[in-house]
Image (tube, rainbow, N blue to C red):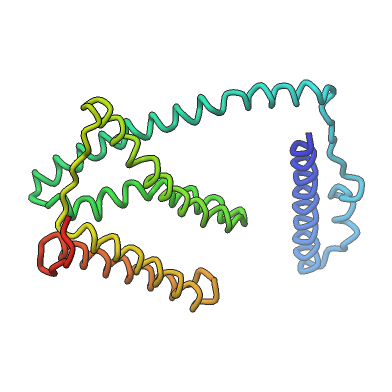
Length: 236
C-alpha cells in the first residue's frame, strides 16, 4: 500500500512540474511577442487547483495476503532460476568449445575471454540497473556475491554429484598454472582495492582505465602461464 501511495504522489509531482514548465515556456514566448501574461494565465490550467486522485486499496489485508502467498513460491523460483542458469551454462561452454576448435583458439583463451564475458554480462546489467537507482552497495555486492556463489556452490555442487555417481571418486583437475593463477587473482584483488582507494572511492574515467589495464595484465600473464612461457614453481 505504501508503494502505491508513493507512486501516486510521485505521479502528482511529475504532473505539476510539467504544467509549471509549460506555463513558463508559454509566458516567455508571449512576452517575446508582446502579448500580455494575463492572457496565458486564463488559457492554462491553474496548477494550484490541479489534483490527482489518490485512492488507497479498499481492503489492505487482501493485498497483504496476496503478497504473502506470492512470497511462498520464492524457493521454487530460486531453484528454477538455478536450473535455467545451469542449462544455459552447459550450452554456452559447449558452443564456446566448438567455436574454439573451429577457429583454432585454445581453451584457455576462450575461458579467459569469451566465457568470462558471457558469465559477467548478467552481473553487469543488474549492477548498472541498481547503480542508476542510487543503490551503490547493492551494485558492488552483486558483483562480489555472484563470484562467491560460483566458487562455493557452482563449482563444488557438480563435482559432488559426479563423485556420488562414481563411487566417491575424486575429480582430477589438471592445469599448468592453476596455483599461480589463484595467487594472481589475490594480487589483482589487492590492486583493485588500492586503485579504488586511490581514486577516492569514486567511479571515474581514470578508475575505468585502470580496471581495463589490470584485466589486460591478468589475461596476458594467465595465458603465458598456461602456455608455459612463464614457469610456475608449483604445478598441479
